[in-house]
Image (cartoon, rainbow, N blue to C red; front, side):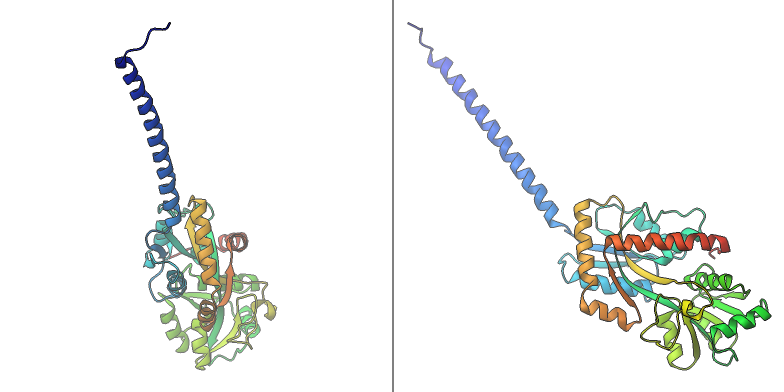
Length: 342
């Protein structure tokens, strides 16, 4: 017959068993809640306002596209979308700021062919790498450039201007909104491919260039089509060609550069949204979905088209392809022309 355990021995054993069960239960509860909290945090994105960094001042093409997209995205997000203009050194300051922002999905960049492609060719020591530092979310719209001339010139077509420039090297002048600007790059590339020498007259902004062009103090100017069209429609200037892949509905009688036969050249200033690289995949996927939804909205397309834009509404992979195509096309050409920023 086994000796009976005393009550003093049994009670501690029961207490230890109860404590073990309780500890396991608490651990399971903590893990369940932790998992639930993690899931809730992920599902809550975005839990605060998303910021779109615009590397140009308010009122320009960058700013217009950013505000059209932010207005539409904000309709879906209760946390809101804000536009922040970070200017300086052309587009360098704002773009560099976005590249170095926390990759948490809350800071996006309004990118264009200007800060994502042309800068690569112009700056020897660029502070950011457009390919390595950013992930494309989507390209929204593209704007071609329109080459315009003073209306009192005897030359009325691009071919006539090229013929005159060949016979008179350096006599024809062309304006830009500054050395290294998109207006400068597309014009310099055209003269190079056409084999002519023109004199560059850089201005501080497009408005000053238009003042002298309308006043016949400079001959030619390549500017974004929506702005140039205003002066063409008013009869102040003559449109010679557009730089995009097709004619504009707003200027249907103006040929593309390719159609003129002068140069096999095409440049469209596209605009889209980019996120810093290393943004988590889940946030990246959600952002791409929201951006694509905004770009494909009929009212967004209408606003872009009303301003003379060509709606792109490209998803991430198609945007990446356009981005890399333009890098391969334009960077070597810009470097061969030795175009430098101001």
